[in-house]
Picture 1 (cartoon, one colour):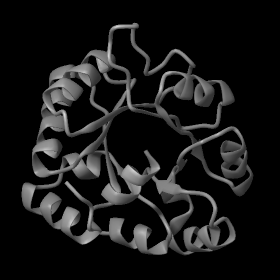
Picture 2 (picture 1 turned 180 degrees about the vertical axis):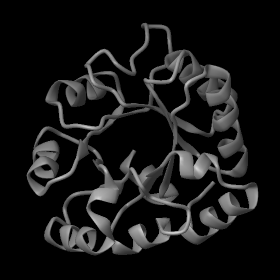
Picture 3 (picture 1 turned 180 degrees about the horizontal axis):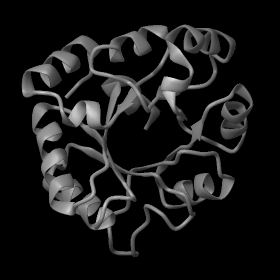
Picture 4 (picture 1 turned 60 degrees about the vertical axis):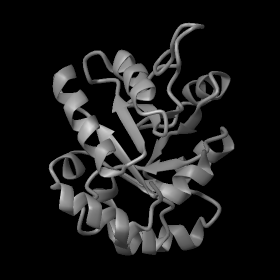
Length: 198
């Protein structure tokens, strides 16, 4: 999974108050070429939508976001599960449950201590959250000090500055509303600039 994240460099975050609105937003970014997509558990019908998107877009990697409990992002024995599980915090039980279900774990961290704790619990990728609270210059310093941590800044990353986060040391960026509000041309330009593979 970390190789996929490194190669695509962009995770689209779908967080909508309505399932139909979430489906439309997900379809739009997938059609534009984004291949890593996270449906947050705050979205109505999130698990069903994850299954639907995975079936409709077999070349996409669909994950669950805002997972706060070990049961989040799962499915029944015959249901496809999220391919990756993202959380805003570091919770060992959630990380272990993700791995037990065959999913990558991407917990959220803000401080060096939280990031290293996440790695010690087996995190595959560390979501730096909220990225807006640290800024690019400080993030570059953090990456130089903790070059063993695969960071994915999320929360406040824009279409305009996403490439800067990659240049500063991120393996990928997570983008929500900024991405779903972007035009098709802006999405295409971003994917080209990031060099992500579709």
